Amino acid sequence: MVNSSKQKQYYYWVDNTKCIACILVVLGHFWMSMVVSGISKENVIYDFTIQSIYTFHVPLFFVCSGFLYQKTNRVHTIKSWSKNVLYKLLNLGVPYFTFTLITFLMKAVFSNSVNNQNGNIIRTLFISPIAPYWFLYALFFLFLVTPCTKTKKQAEVLLAVAFALKIANIVLNVNNVSMPSIIKYILGMLIWFAIGIFLAFDEIKLTSKIYKVIMVISAVCAFAICIFCYRTPKTNEPIKFIVGLLFVTAIIIASYNFQNDKLNNFCNKFSKYFMPIYVMHTIFAAGIRIVLLKLGITNIFIHTVLGLTLSFAVPIIIYKIAIKLPFIMFFISPKEAIKSKKTNHTAENSYGK
Image (cartoon, rainbow, N blue to C red; front, side):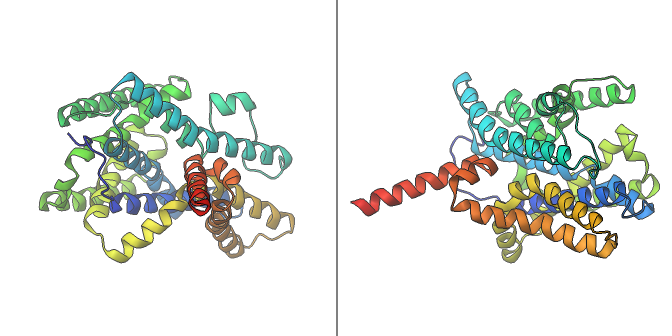
C-alpha cells in the first residue's frame, strides 16, 4: 500500500515536471494571444509549437496532481472523502472564483481591446470556465469523483476505466456531440490523473534501462508525428491524445532520471510560485499588451520582453507581498494563508510565554 503512512519524502521530479508545464503554459498562452491580437503572424513554427505543447502541458499538471493525491492522502471512506472535497473546494475554489471574476471584470472594462469577449457570468463561473482557470475547475471535479486506491491492482483498474472514458470522449468529440463541461473534463482528463495515481505505485521503476529507452522512443515518435501532422492535433482528437501521451511519457521519465541538486533546488524554490503565476499570468500579459497597443507600440520584441517579464515577475512579487498579508494570500492560495496565520499565531503565543 502506497499511502499507509504520510512519509516526509519529497518528490523533486514532480516540481521539475510542474516547472516545465508552468513555463510552457505561460509561453503558449502568450504566443497565442500575440497572434490573435495581430501583433505576431501565424506561421509554420507557431502552428507546430502551439499544436505540440497544447497536447501535454496541462496534462502534466494533472499527472502530478494525481501522483501527489495518491501519495499524500487517504481518501477511502465517506468521511475522508467529504473532508477532502471541502479542503479542495477551498484551495481550488477560492482562486478559481477570484481570478475568473477579475478576468471577467477586465474584459468588461476593456471590451474593445481584449481578444475574447465575456459571456454570461453565471455560465462562466459554473458551467463553461474560461482559460486558464478551467484547470482548477476540472481538477476539483476529478478530486470529487476519484478515491485513492489501496492497491496497485485498484490503480490498474482505475487506469483502465479512465482510458475507456478517454476513448469515449474522443468518439463523442469526433462526432461533435455536445457535452456539459463537467462531463467533458472528467471524460477527457481523468486519464492523466489516473496515470499519476498509478505512478505512485511504480515510480521507482522509472530509473530502469527499459524506461529510458521508452523515453527516447516516445520523444522521437511525438516529434515525428508533430512534424508530419503539425496542424492535425488541433482537429484530430486521436492524434492529439497519442501525441500528448508520448510527450507526457518522455517528460515524466526524463524529470525522474535527470535530476541534480541545482535543478532540484531551483524547481523546488520556484514551485511555490506555480499557483500565482498560473492564475495571474494572462491578466498581466493582457494588461501590458492593451497598454502598449493604446500607445501605438506594435513592436514584437517590446511586446515579448515586457509581456513575458510581467507574466512571471508580477505574480511572484505579489506572492512575496501576500506572504506577509494572509488576507491577500487567501485569495491566491488559501492553504498558504491558513498556514501563515497559524505560524504567526504560534509565534505570538510563544513570545507571550
